[in-house]
Amino acid sequence: MRPLNNEIITPEMMQIKSMIIDTFVQRDAIKNEMEHWYDIIPASTSRR
Image (cartoon, rainbow, N blue to C red):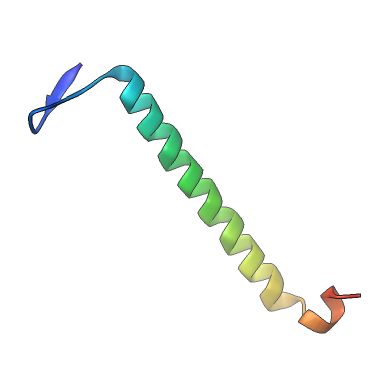
């Protein structure tokens, strides 16, 4: 454990924080991929 501004951060808490950050990074990558996909494929051809 290490103190951080009068808080105690356990290894488990660091792991959870890391997992949350990884989730946000993955979500942003998927969001960017979807935006790119919608930019290159017109809406009229994607809805059949």
